[in-house]
Image 1 (spheres, rainbow, N blue to C red):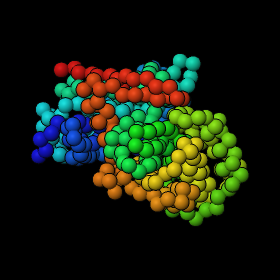
Image 2: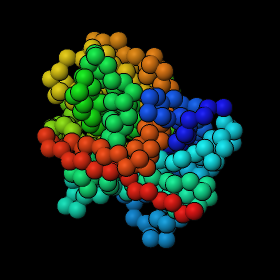
Image 3: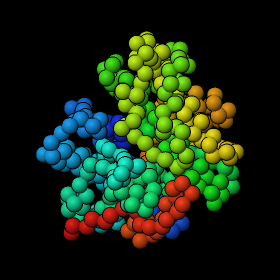
Image 4: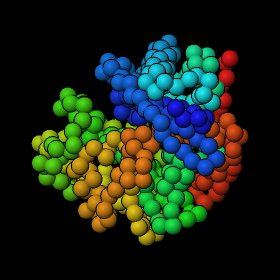
Length: 363
């Protein structure tokens, strides 16, 4: 059994299909993952969450009930992690709760981001401090509220080489690292458009391995139409979400095409936007590492490799499970907040420093 302090990160992505929790050993010299646990979200509960995230009108009561529903999933996942890895509660120094994002509006008149999951309930149940609401702290400091994994990427991937780390979740975020220079940003959709098409039209969860997309033809006119959206014209860094990249975003003319063509086009579009957004850096890239659920979509990886003309590597090659990078990041961020460590927030060339996240300690 490890003897270092343990921190736990727990998160659920925009697909709202599971909660991933990860336990980390952290000291001043190293970070190591000691275990993980995944809790599936039922299709019925997933629908409730996604309906809320899609902007459908709801009542305050229903919002509160869905919030507590998500809380129970987070707690169940953390408890499963502790049980599976025989972790003593006394060893856990903090929990980083990313929450379930249902709305992200960093550029509204009064910027905000909403994540579901009650840190009070979790802290009381486990007797451990919980750090949450990272995104609104980031926004208050002038940032976009996302991506927050940039800090962890820099810690784990720093090298004398210039590296691009791409997280393929529902939304793509990336971090470019070259010695002391670091920049993180969202790039657009990764799996979001493909998944929502599969779920709403094909009644499938997703295009497993990108196998359907691999059989289709790419419709360039639809790719061009989608790429004209104002998000892609904005300067880096920036953030986005399913408020934009949902079923309504897909051109109606494309939806009339065979499923193979629709998915081939959406798959290529995701890869092309990642490529084009990272080209705005105007910096040479030596290595590319990928993490997140999209790493299982071989067609997406093939499209990325074709565009970048660089071998795409899994984060596993540096010892990080690609499916755990994001949850691990929130455990790491929890330690930073509990240690009162100030982090820098960069936005449009300006920077501010502050503490990310709010601490909840009930007992």
